[in-house]
Image (tube, rainbow, N blue to C red; front, top):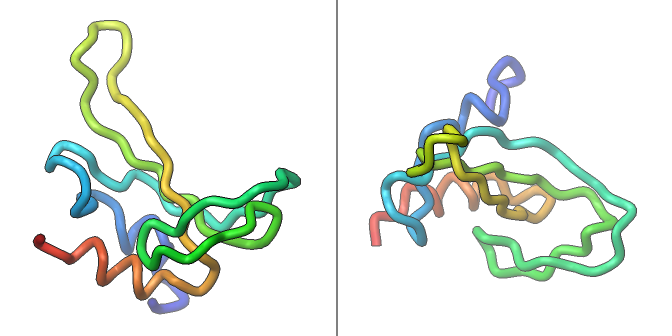
Length: 93
């Protein structure tokens, strides 16, 4: 990823292989929380402590209801695993 290319620009609009084609990446941001606990990295399967640096991938898809434009979901990506995220999003399985 070049210094001028944002994470969101790099991944926006792509669909994860474990979701239907309507789901797409809307934003990717580096995060760290005060939460204890952990989550599984969507791209690598590694355990990610939520109180350490990681990336939060916000997914969206058009909502069927009239009151909301989109439904949202989040994925956790381990720190340093953006290349793996790139490969995972390209997976056509």
